[in-house]
Image 1 (cartoon, rainbow, N blue to C red):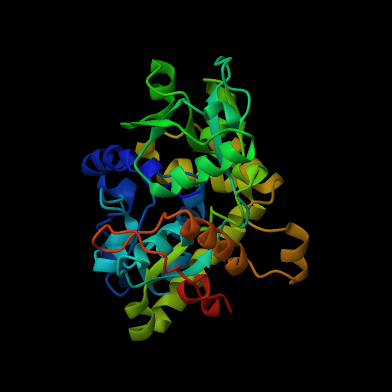
Image 2 (image 1 turned 90 degrees about the horizontal axis):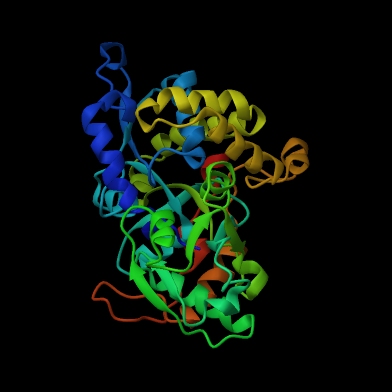
Length: 350
């Protein structure tokens, strides 16, 4: 499920603490970097374990080894996809799902490394809400929405697959879906199991959750990874290769050394005030659940870390297209389905 809009409110929170402490977001004024190529990377939302490989690579000096001085940018209100498409950022974290959505509006983006290999989206109500025990109970209830047509299509399928009609109301969320549910303004919302799911387990509120794949939603919606502009790939493939190589090393290291990587994230993103135990618990879930790839396959070389799941993404794109989730630059629904193989490449992983 596309969580970009679900996280957009956090852009303003992150922007605020970046203004107060530029170095925490990668805006370092370091003269020793004068001989390095300046490159910018935009976050997908506030710092979390989906970004951890970038922070590890920066902390370990692997970007510098590749000849790069990487600035970490707070996510813009218009999104990391727009920033990369417009040239405001060289690289960013997002999903191939978002790249596909942007492509129908004329964006010129490509995913160059896919970190997450299995879905982590969960759809939840508060555990104390005795009126919701399965997705069919979303019928007639209120969804804490950030406005994505994609979410509507997913929820509708889940409800109908579970025996409901697929009718629900929506309310626009501010910065916290948790608070919206607790206030009673909404009955259910979307989260990531590897972050908000962990947060709920550790600190509350307790949730009752469901996964879309168990209720008729096909493919892989959570294709989180690194994107750049296709023009950058054409103009400077050496830059793209250098960035991807260092980032890949950072993520692989985090996958193999989750506790150490967690400490690095907490230290490097200090103004985010991340709880070390929370971050380590999130990484433990990612590692134990093999969200970034099968450990045995990676070790044996059967699977190359960062490879794009083109089939899983395409199955999901087809589903969204059939549901009318895509719109063109004028906001008109288009049924021209984005093609995952045209929006992603593995050539820089080699």
